Image (cartoon, rainbow, N blue to C red; front, side, top):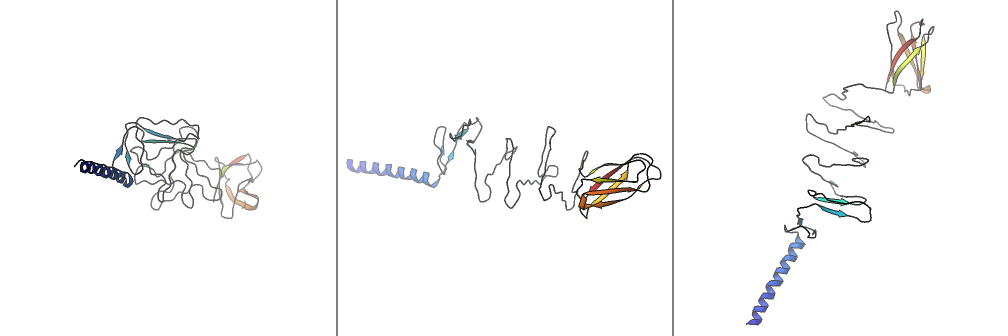
Length: 237
């Protein structure tokens, strides 16, 4: 009788241990608490932030009271996914980047950084500079630095001053009727617009000849001027 009771107790303990092992192995909804180890396949709950630090890197790693998980190392958090490497969701911002470069995006065959919104008042990509630098900067060695394209709307809207490196002022000296401007890259498709600054009676810009080979163009007036006369010019294409 005693042997039978002992056997049944041992059997019950074995079943309980086996069940617990299955729960861990299959990723049950059982949760850990403060001070418990993080277990694969389980949800870990805590009333304080959790920090994971790689001590090979000299970096202070502290989790705030309301942080979920803080990772510290040469790379604080690395994600590798077939769709998204890292997916962030927040009521204010999905991802916040703070650093010498706040967010760095490197694309292979597609975009380095892509922003999409369905808002009628917000922007797909928004840049702001609170000092004297650029809000948004686009650079390309051989391609188009900034592309503005709209199927049915306005491709480019400028509120404020606009400056162009391919524009300026040339001065036709007194007794002369033309002036040459050099150092401007031109092609056969380049167009030079020129107009006299001020009201010079009986005098106007007769035409402009371009010379892409020498990166220069010449502005011709209809006649020689009695005094120095300024002409504004603007190159497109």
